[in-house]
Each structure stands twice: as C-alpha cells, then as structure tokens.
Image (cartoon, rainbow over all chains, first blue to last red; front, top):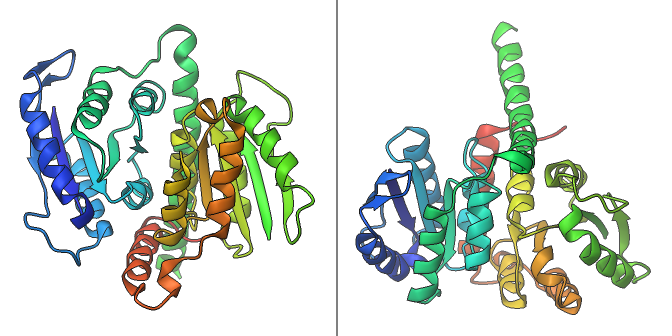
Length: 173
Length: 161
C-alpha cells in the first residue's frame, strides 16, 4: 500500500516528522502489505503557499491510482479536510485524537487523514498507526457502517449526476 | 440568523443541550432537523444532508451537526455544494475554523462532548462570534484560499438552484 503525503507551510515541519514515523513503521502491516510512502510536496518551505493546491494534488494522485491513501497536514487540518472532501471518492477525516483515528478507520473508512501542524510526535505516531491498523468494520451488526457509507455516496453521487445532466443538456442544445 | 441543528444517536443529547441554550436568543432562530427521538440505529448522512441542503446558498444560515466524532458529519456535509464543514473539538479550533476557514457548518464530536456539554456551547458560541479574517485588512490570503476551495467545489458539482 502506498501513502501520499502533502502539507502547506503550516504543516511543513510536521510533514517531515510524519515521514520519519512512516519510515519506522513495520514494513509489513496486517492485511495492507508493504507500506510505501511518497512526499508530494511542498519540497521547500514557502510561507505563501496555499493548502488547496496541495489538497488537489493529493486527491489527483489517489484518484489516478498513484497512491492508495493520503495524509494531509495544514495549520489546523480544517482547510485540507474541507478541500479534500469536495473531491468525489475522497473521505478525508480530520483526526484530532487516537479515538478519532480509530473511528475514522472503523466507521468512516477514511482514505485520507488530515492532521494539524502542532501535534507532538507520540500523538501523531499513535494516530497514524491506529488509522493504518484498524480495519473498516462491515461484518455482523457492523453492516450499519457500510449502510451509512452508501448513504453518503448517494449524497455525493446525486450532485455529480445533476452536473452530468446539465452538461449533456447544454451539449445537445 | 438561522441555525439548523441535526444529529444522529451519538449526538442526540448534545443537540438537546445546544437547542435549549440557543433557543430564544436574540437574532437567532433555531431549527431542529432531527433526529427527533433517540434511535440507536439511525444514520448520520440522513440528518447531515438535510441540514446541509438548508444551509447551502443561504448566507444567513449556518448548521450545527453532531455525530460520534464529528468526522462522518463533516465528510457528508462537505459533499453538498456550497457547504464548508469541519469537525471542531475545542474552542481554539472553533476560533480558527471561523477566522481562517469561514466554515458554515460545524461538526461536533458528540461522544466526547457528552461528558461536558458546556464545552459544546462554548465551541459553538466562539465559532459564531469570530469574524472571518479574510474580510479584515491583511487577511487576503485566507480569502484566496477559500475561493480556491469553492472552485474545486464548482468543478465537481453544479451549485444548487
């Protein structure tokens, strides 16, 4: 499994920490295979850069199949999470605690986690390893999580469909 | 201003506390969009979408959504065109959510705030009270970033009529 990592200037230092943590992770993870990661930028600190540019970059990489999951860091994690969730197919969870990371994985099947730039190292490590290790629960009475996800996808899909219809209509006019 | 409240079972109690606090306040009209009774099998997208649709395109309305962690609600609300939503778990984050990101829907972690409902009130108060820095001098960069998020929103979805 490959993880893509992005940040803006406010998450730049945290991104470096995260890559060190990912390097330390056991190479073989339960059910996920070998874990690889790639830094999609920024590759230098630019105090004037904007989170939407890197959010878009990460979303494109995931949807294009270049990586499977993503980690995005900005000052509070809010900007990244709003922006990534606008992209169909992305479920970005702003993980503010280990418990949030656990639920993001088991209940929301988040394919991206967003982190704030001022988390300390043990917290980040806990959040990332929890998110990677906890599986999405769908068996038995946990089918409710799948049902909720499907409802969410319906919300997502209905606007895409509407957009497609409007496009088609203008094409035939 | 209109505030639309919605919660699943995990946010049921916090929603009640917030409604009791904000109802009857000056210049605030509270609308409860459910769930109206406790049902531990209900699903957050049902209520999240309802509130998001009310807030989208209405500059004088905001939404307060509550689920277990705030994550599910924030994801589903952001899928609706015109909605900017984020989970806010403490007062500091609520401040930045307003000042830097101008979110119009706040998602609260019900399981966490159940134990201290006063904090839920404080979080929402600070979020409502804080002004967007993008409208102040030297805040241009925040405005530019929010506009880029809107562009991404429009790219994938036609805004609601």
